[in-house]
Structure formats: structure tokens, C-alpha cells
Image (cartoon, rainbow over all chains, first blue to last red; front, top):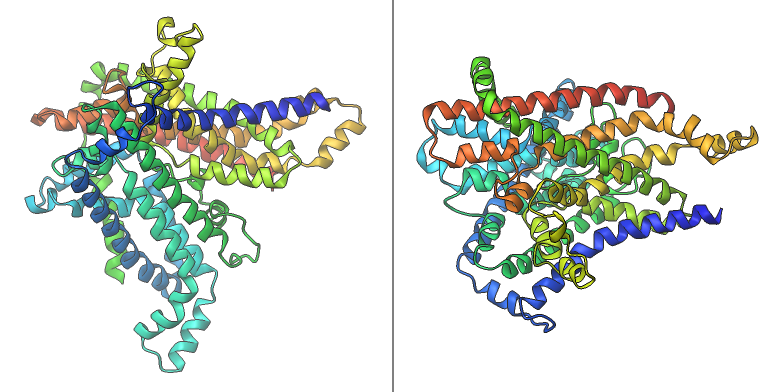
Length: 288
Length: 261
């Protein structure tokens, strides 16, 4: 028994160290910034003064919020409509929404560039194209989040009750439906945001002219590794913060449609479609 | 709203539609010089998946065995976050740690063992595996946690009653039951590693021959007419690999449901 326990804690401790060491080391690295044994925030302050940082962050925010807005405008009405009128299409939509998980991002880039060759120039070189791609990229997660939100309410009854009391669709949606699926919608929004902010493959290959933050970050290393590491620390903290927010939203959700309480966001996402769902979508590999 | 749905479907048709355009002849013709990329890509992903799978499984078993439910919940939420870490920042975090001037490298060379004197470099295939493990390990734990938790205590007790020791239990019951979900997990890990682009691009800047990097270079270079199809063909090959892994995943997943429900 004691041998068992030693083994157990030793394993967990080693894994824990593996997780912590790179983070600790990169903080240390960025604080030393070349003057060994003398800690300073130099790398951070100089990194923030690098040209292009502001612009790239703005581009990233623009693209990400564009993607979030497009996701919500597209998915929420579609999913509600499909639930109400076309329940048979649900399986198809679900399968389609999983496609981006299987197709490597780089392949999508090849496909996209091939197709958009015919598109007008203003579209090819605008951040809009990235926002639309991120909508697709985030689809496996955003679709699942909103879908399980809609599933957990009695949509038909709510709609009929609202309609019979004379509510127009706009009012019905704003005052009845949205408050009920808010946590699902919020989770979808944050997931899309987190994914869009960190994405590199699409951004670097499709929109090299207007770098997003990750693309700019990858290029700043030629100026100084310290800057790059320092900013990476900041970026990781921001991303983790977003992901923690997502899991808090997820766990604060009411009971799932099946009546079983769900612990975390991951299980919530997973539990909605047991048959079709590859286990891979438990996690969203933001950008590997 | 109907157009909304069709736009969604259309988006996919755009992305994958051009794949079908790449004719097989180009693929066969061009595969010759790029075969090497595929082999090293496959090797790298397989190695990363296998390592992450085995270490992750041991970690999961250790985690499930721990009596503290708080620890378990903490670790599984942490895994959810870490599995999603990746890309450029992660690559730089590792450069800061075990890059050639990284903090850990410094420490190790003070201790008299500089890994860079012993043939190791972060900017290589083995370096990439170490970085990939950072998000593949938590993913393994997430995926294996449900099946390992489902290994019923009763089975263990029944086995003990019948005189099986711990080793016999794992050999005769534990591992056979866990095998299907484990293989499924390996497939997911493999696909994840196989598709990874950002980390590899930033860390190795193309030194390690990998299919995604080859495609990236084709796309970044001045693309001549013939090379457009080369990119398509390479992409098509990747999809084939992913589909094979995906099918295996589905087949194995079916078996999983027999015992673990």
C-alpha cells in the first residue's frame, strides 16, 4: 500500500513539475532579460514599446470580436430554428459542425486560398476573411455550447407560451429565449474569442499583410528573444484567464437536458452528443 | 434563417471543395520529393502520441487512485485549460526554459550537464515532442479519466478475492478493458500532433521536415502554377492520414462501449 502511494504521489509530482517548470522558467527568463541574477521588468517595458504591437493587438481584437459576433448571429437563430422546425436536420448539422476538428488547419488554408483566389482583392486582404474562418474553426465548440443550451430548455413550450401571449419574435427572443440560454451563448462567445485570439496558422498564411498578435509575436523574436518570451507570458495568462472564465460559465449551468448534473464545461460539451462526438472535442486545441 | 444555415454549410464546401480538385496524378507525381516529409511527420506524431499516451495513462491511474476528490477536480480542470494551451506563446515559453540560453538549460549546465553538449536541441524533432507533450499529456488525462474511473472497484475486489495480486489484475482485467479507449485516445493525440503547425513553425523555422511546414513554405513562396496543386496534393495526403486515424478511432470507440457504460 505504501509503495502504491509513493508511486502515485511521485507520478503526480513529476507531472506537476513538468507543467510548472516551463512557466516558472519563462517568467524567470523574461525577468533576467540577459543581465543574469539581476531581475527587472526591462523586457516587459521594452517589449510593450515595440513598433507594431498596438496595431497587431487591434487587428486581433477586431478579428476575434468579428468572429464572435458572426458566430452568435449565425448560430443562435439557426440552432433555435432547427430545433423548432427541422429536428431531422440536427444530426446533419452536428456532423458538419465537427468537420473542422478533423481537417488540419493547414489543409483548410490551402483550400481557402484556392477558392478565394477568385474573390475580390478587398475581401482577400481584409481581416474579415479571418473572422469568417474563425467562425468555422470554432464551430465544433460554439455549436455544441449553444446547442446544449437550447436543448436544456423546453423550447417548444416557451415559444408557444410567448407567442400565445402576443409576443413578436424579437421580443420573444430577447425577453424569453435569450435569458434562458445565456450561459450556453456566453460559453460559445468566450470559446470563439479564446480560439481567435491565439490562432496562428490561418493568420500567418492568409493575412500576412496585417499581422494579428500571435503572428507579430512570432516575428518579434528576431528583435529579442526576451521580448518574445515576456509577451508570451502575458499572452498565456490572458488565454488561461479566458479559459477559466469558460469553465466557470460551464459549471454554473443548470442541469443538462438528460437531467444529470454536469460537472465542468468539458463534460457539458461532451455529454450533448454521445454518439457522434469524438472524444477529441473534450478539449479545444487552440493552436497546436 | 435558412440562408444562415446554408452559409454555414457553404463555408465548409469552400474549404474542402478545392481538395477534390487536386487530381490524383499530381499527388502521385509530386509525392516523390515530399515522401520524406510525410515519414518524419508520421514518426514525430506517433512518437509524441505514444509518449503522451503512456505517461498520461500512468498519470491518470495515479490521479484516480488518490483519495482527495479536491485534487482530482483541480487536476481535471487544470488539464482542461492546459490541453488548450499551445501555439506561439507555448513555443516561446519553452525557448525560455530549455532553449539554448534558457533558464533550465543554464541550471543544468551549472550542474555540469548541458543538454546541448549531448546532442539535444529544442529546435529539433525530439525538442518538438517535448513541447507537444505539454498539451498532449493533459489531453490524455482528460480523455482517459472517464474510462479509468469506470474501472469498477468491485472488479478489483472480486479479483483480489479470487487471489489475484495487483499485477494480475492489471494484466488480466485493467489493461484489456482500458485498451480500446486507450487506442482511441492515441488516435486523437496522433491527429492533434500531426496537424500541429504553429509550434513547429515558430520553434524550428522549417529545419525539421514536416508536411504542414512544407505546405506553409509552398504557400509563402512565390507560388508558380504547378506548385498550387502541390500544396493541394500535400494537403490531400494529410486528410487521408487523418481519415485513416479517424476511422480507426470510430472502430475502437465502438468496442469501448461494451464494458464502460
